Image (cartoon, rainbow, N blue to C red):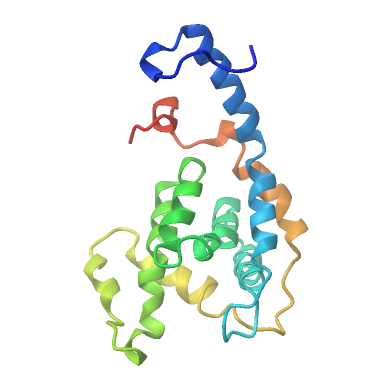
Length: 194
């Protein structure tokens, strides 16, 4: 079989879904390679900044690594802005969605909300609310997200910072995105469940 016969999912057979599961496993195995290609595409300047999006991401991940953070946090730091090109107004949510099956709920929450928390540093200059993050002040990840922004985001625009190369992080990415490391993210979630 090289493709299924059905045109409505309700008409699929056990054999067809077994075939699709195998095809999805093969596709999923290439996730890290696609993420690396996407990161390389971020090697363009962020309008007005002194570093590219990739440079910012590498600084963030390098700082997290050098601070002794767990691998999943280092990888989250590397990917936290990966949605900038496709989802500029919700980039954290996009990055968090990619990370969700492979990182803890804490790290997922930090990445998902870092954009709002990062506004602390600049929103007041453009008529925004620098304290918008305070709506989450009772959330268990509030302080961790502030620390992430302080230590691994707002300070990662230095063209003179000696960050690690993308190749340095590839083995970490392969370990974090290993399908056996999923955090309770079951098959049903892949097919549209919560």
